[in-house]
Length: 380
Image (cartoon, rainbow, N blue to C red; front, top):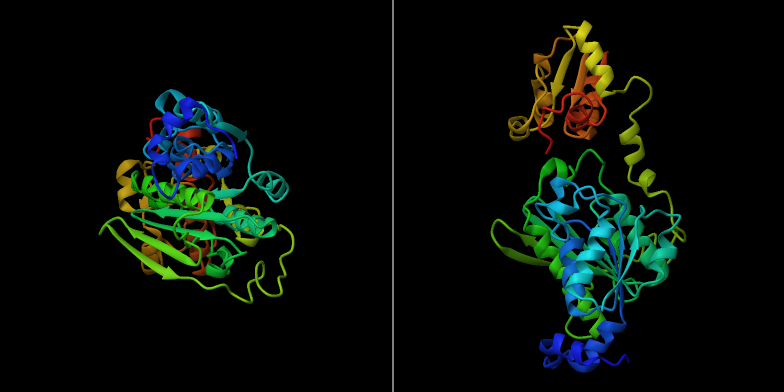
């Protein structure tokens, strides 16, 4: 057990007087190693509270740079950090909160090639990722390594938290055996998220990590906590271990890490179905200059079109597209577009299936158009 200095005794005095923490529990926190997957909306509050609580070593895996659109919810970072590596920004902020904390930064994408090596160095993993391939990767790596995985997710006004620990209960695959189709669930960039919501869920993840380290209370093992921000309500679902789970079941078939992009269908969705499926912003700009009848179909929601739009685009939200096919000329040359290019691929699939012969999707969506063609269009 690590001895605490006089400064640390004063810093953690409110912990030391808690019957369930005390000097022994605080020493356990100082000796603990917790890895945060992501320094974004969930990772920000989790990192801040774990550092303030005195977790001795905090690892952070994140390959991204701080963007202005992050600042509405990613409270680890400030305006002066825009363009800076998130791991560098996070390290500076956490060291300012608590100089006794060691921060180990991994400024790279977590992949099947490096996940086991990185995760093996830590006692607990806090998953703050925002995509299904990473969630399945983190889950499988934690099961194979015998590590607890503190899961959190947010979307719009709702959140989820659980502790997946295969040694004592179910894993993420016991709850979600198969990922949803990539075009079925919009990302936070497309669907939005209330800025305070990740603060609530990320703080709960930090609480679960502290409980596991110190050994008090009842962790969310075998329980899924659901949060409804609109009604300010919590609900709890009981989870059971699936004997047939391919990774933690009685006869596991997943005994090594796999290609999670392919498993979740992200590779196919992003690449489309071959040549002629997508068009770049600059190519579209050139074609529009000499093809006045080329039809640009915006499949975003009206609230998104109010923020930014490409001049001349016809707004038909993706959810309405099947019932509004009659509004599109049957022999038109069509380019679909959305925010980042995922929904427009689905729209293309619908149009091609309905018999439209010449349909492409704008690669990168209106965001890429604003970056590469028309900087006057607001980005969001």
